[in-house]
Image (cartoon, rainbow, N blue to C red; front, side, top):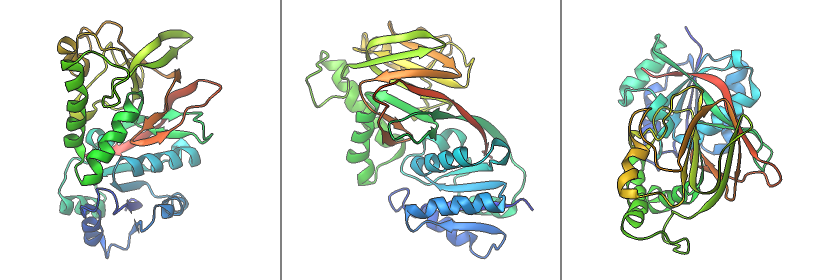
Amino acid sequence: MTKAAVIINPRSGRGRGKGLALAEKLRGHSALDLTLLERFEQLYPALQRVAATGAERLFISSGDGTVHAIQTWLAENLPAAKLPQLCLLPHGTTNLTAADLGFKNRNIAAQAEFIAAGTPTQINPRHTVHAVNPKSGAPLHGMFFGTGAIPEATLYAQRAFNDKGVGGDWATFATLAKATSKALFSKPDPTDINRFDHPHQIELVINDRIICSGTQLLMIATTLNKLILNSKPFWGGATGPLRTTTIPYPLPNPVRWLIPSLFGSENRNAPPGATSTACQACLLRSDTGFVMDGEFYDAPEDEPLRLEAGPLFHYLIA
């Protein structure tokens, strides 16, 4: 039987109890290495044990933040050939990564049965987004990176909705509605503290070519195929594992370009000044910090932040 480990963060999901329900159904399966985190500090000893025992599958009951921490530890401490297959169980307040790469069956009993049985399944390989040199000096591995307006909007969503028990697409939709209502019905105003669409100085360089430089609204980089509300805000072809998109400030004609910026085919028309490029690596300068999978970080002060495609993980999705 395939060696398997399970890590459950019961605090994910603001106490909705999905992780605890899964743990209860898995009790008694001695072949499983089950960790129920009482404190987040227990995560790294648990991962060391996963590595030491040679677990081939790691099931993660959590939200984006815990998945991000686990991917970072594994990528930085294990060779690519030793990385376990990951199965993401969307039990958190935000589950952006699991929405694209997670286990598709949302039924707790079905999840427990699959974990215990260890049967073959469909596997989806995907690179991480590797932030090589954040200000802290510790490399990061995640699936979604955002700067410019993204950190402020993320913080608002967490405080206004996630902390009150509203998560997922509902929180995202409400935050997007707040941002777009200002853009649609009033002129740009960089001094208005009640809106997210402020100008940011962002420069993106790929293969020594300046993709954008100057006043931008936001920049994102991801290896996911879809984002919030099933949006796909990239175009031009997936010719590399890292998809980057920049949106200028102010967004030209929001009535005309809001929906096309988020949805459409790879050959869609793009807003004037917006860019979307697939690449292996890029260099970024921004006048603000950045978000990776819902966690906040600072960029280096004296050099550009380097983003690149990280190691290839394999996700059990069905």
